[in-house]
Amino acid sequence: MGNIFLFSLIVGLAATIVLIPFFKTHSKKEDKKLTTGALAVLLIITIPAVFIFYYFTNLDRNPSSLWLLAIISTAAGSLFATGKERVIKGILFAGSLFIGIYFLTAGIFNANEKYQLAKMEEKVEIEAFDEKETPASVPLILPVIK
View (cartoon, rainbow, N blue to C red):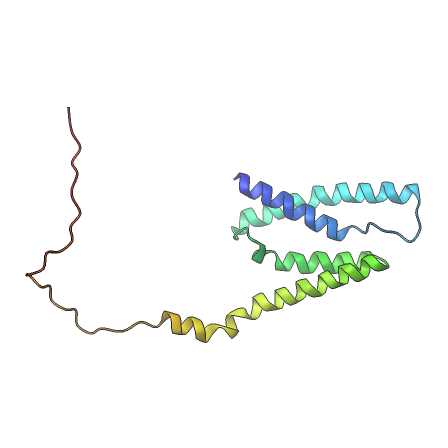
């Protein structure tokens, strides 16, 4: 159970960092307070949301299951950002979109290879046991009762 908590914490923190715009064109104390407050609120929302999603869907907690969240968070992050930060988050969005398309189409492009791996030699009749050879056996160990 601790694994899902740690995974939710890391994924929620990463999604929050991508979503929050850190650089503004103008600098005010109110904007810094707003960014800090938005960061705290977004962390409080994303970490439990990721936990609930993975807990109830029982998906594998690995990087390949994060492609949809990566597409959504990088798209929203690039919309909220300005300047060079928008360009960087736009590149992250394009990369996550490419990875998502790859995961969705990978089964189509390597299906023939998987079919060849699964092909087995078919035998109609099983060979009879040769009585001259001794079959392998597993020794039976009985418990000692005192």
